[in-house]
Amino acid sequence: MASTGMQIFGFVLALLGILGATVATLLPNWKVRADVGSNIITVISQMQGLWMDCNWYSTGMFSCTLKYSVLSLPAYLQTARTTMVLCCVLAAMGLCLASLGLKCTRWGGGRRSKRHATIASGGCFVAAGFLCLVPASWFTNEVITNFLDSSVPESNKFEPGGAVYVAFVSAGFLFVGGSIFCMSCSGKRHGPQDLILLPHPDKLLLQQQQQQLLQQQQELQHQYCSLSPLDNKTGYSLQDYV
Image 1 (cartoon, rainbow, N blue to C red):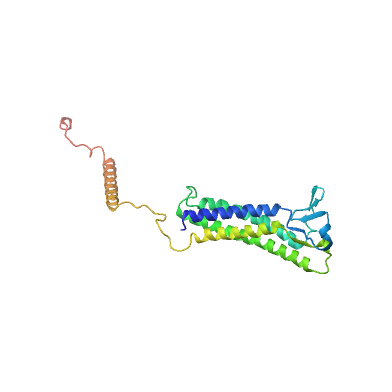
Image 2: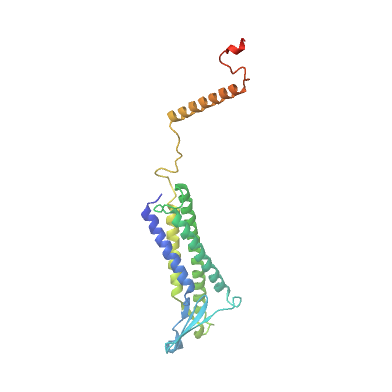
């Protein structure tokens, strides 16, 4: 297995990945208003996220509007919501399994149990990274396609915001952390594994002899108890001849 330092490094990367994915899910700046044409002199900065749309006015006032209707949202936005939530849940499960599989921890059972927990956590991290990468890529593609479309008015053109870049970086952290946990259990196993303690041959022979003697004593006791009272007399009495 990999060294404890590599496992801790992978755990830190996965922790940063889940924190970044959670922050990216909640941030409202998945796409921002582009400074193109007449928008350069606009007094309002607009941002759109997965859950809300925010406006930043020149007076310093900041207002946000939640997106209550789910069915009215485009397909890529609904998919981004679902996959980002699943990413956070799956990464949290992987984090719990990774804490059990770390070599520096005492909980989690023996080496075999830790090995299984490590592989499972690595799989969760890789899957979470994939779930984080898909919505970020799809969302970016939609924003760029809309930006390059000449039929779209300049006032409706946006650019990818900071939350998209946070999602890409978080996906990379999850991929690397999951790969480290998966590779930590591949290859040959070095060191003692789950050993089954066997008794010494001399002790085993002595135990067998003791069991045989105990069985013989039990058989003799059973035979003695089965004899009649007359057979149990070991001496003679004068009353037998009077």
